[in-house]
Length: 383
Ligand code: COS
Image (cartoon, rainbow, N blue to C red):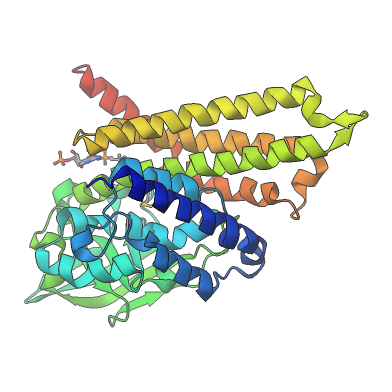
C-alpha cells in the first residue's frame, strides 16, 4: 500500500529530524557504551519505525518498498546500530510471518512487532551453515502435538533482546529445500538459551549471540503457516526483501560519509588552502558521489519493480552486491580524505569504516550475491 505524497514527505522529514537531532548526537556514546538509551528506543517506537513494513491492519505503517528504502536511506545517516534494533522487526524478524504465517500467527505477533513491544530475530545461520544455508543441522522432531528443537544458531542479530525467534529447522534429514521448516519460538521457552553477546569489529550496540535449542519443546501451532517444508524457500524470500533494505541503508551511510568528508575537506588547510581545492581530493569526492548515485538509482529501480509484483531476486542481489561494496569504497575514501584524523576515533569516519564492513557479509556475502546473480542471469538466458 502506498502512502499519499504528503504523508510520505512528513514521515521522511520526521525521520531525518529524529536522526539529526537525537541519533547523531548519541552516536559516540553508543559506540562507547554499546547501549541504546531507552529514550531513543521510545522515539523510534513513536515514529513507527518498528512497523514500517507491517500492514496497518496489524498496527504497522504498511510502507511499500519504494517508501521503505527511502526511510532506510534516511536512517543510514547515523550509526547503523540504531537501525539494527528496529531492522529485524522491519525485515527478517517479521517478514516470514507476513509472507507465510497463518492468520492466528499474524494476529498473535505482528501488532507487538509493529509497536516494538516485541523484538523479532531471524535464526538461520549455524556454526557449520553460513553461506550454505541448506546444510543447517538444527532439527525439529514432531512429538504428538509438539515439535522438539535441537541445535545451535550463530551470530543471531538482536537475539539478546528478542522476544520471538523465527527459526529454520530440519524436519527431514535429506538435502532438499522442503526438508526445512520454519518455527516461531518465543523467548523463555524451556530449552532455549542464549550465548554471551559477541564482541564485534564494529556496530557496537547492535547485539548478536548464539541461540541454543536443547530439547526445546514448542506447540505444533508454532510451525509457520501450519505446514512443514516451506522454511527454506520462505527464508530466501525474506532475504530477497532484506537485501534491498540493506542496500538502501548502505546508500544512506555513504551519503553521510561523503558529507562528513566534504565538510572536513573544506575546513582542513594544507599548502595554504583547503584540501577540497586539490584535484586529487576532488577525484575521491567525485568517485564517491558517482558510486552513491549509481547505488541509489539501482535501489529505487529494484524497489519499484518489487512494488509492481515482479520477482526481484536478481535485482536485490545486484543491489546488495553493488551497494555494500560501494559503501566500503566510500568509507575508505572518507578515511583517506580525513588523513591521520580518519584513523582516530574522535571522527565518525573511523567508526563507520569498521561498521560498514559487515554489509559485505551479512544477509548473504558478496560472493553469494554473485552466485545468485549469475544463476538468475543464466536462467533468463535459458541456460
Ligand atoms: N525466492 C524463493 N525461493 C527461492 C529463492 C528465492 N529468492 N532462492 C532459492 N529458492 C528456492 C529454489 O527455487 C529451490 O526451490 P525447490 O527446492 O522447490 O526447487 C530452493 O529454494 C533451493 O534453492 P537453491 O537450489 O538455489 O539452493 P542452494 O542450496 O543451491 O543455494 C543460496 C541457495 C546459496 C542462494 C542460499 O543458500 C543463500 O542465499 N545463502 C546465503 C544465506 C544467507 O544470506 N545468510 C545470511 C544469514 S541471514 S542474516
